[in-house]
Image (cartoon, rainbow, N blue to C red; front, side, top):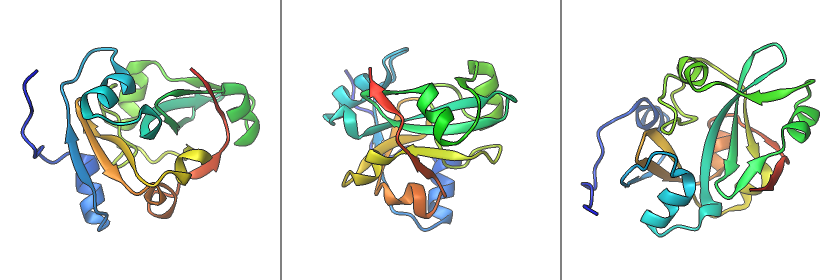
Length: 164
């Protein structure tokens, strides 16, 4: 596979990080349809547990929210609903997620979202020394300190991980 250049042009996510003075590293990779975090982790030589996926969901009133989860885990929707609290949480359809976030599915970042939404992060993500999370484009992750998620983004910690 060909190596991508080490610099990726700006995205709303990288613009947001720069505007907030947050240091980050750029990690481009060759996007593979339905490859998910397993594929990005494999290409970049990362532990999939430290690659964080950005999921756009909605509650029973169709109000959108963002959940940040370890790449090798899935969200327990019942547990998330219990903790945030609401009656029900479900994933948004791809076109709805794109309309809310402003990002193409597979390239969704929690930074620089089109619409303000509550953000929830799996608590164990915050214990990692460093994470990689989508930088606002398919095939592009940014490396950051996970405390950015709570300190700058205002994400609320939840415990809703379950095995894949």
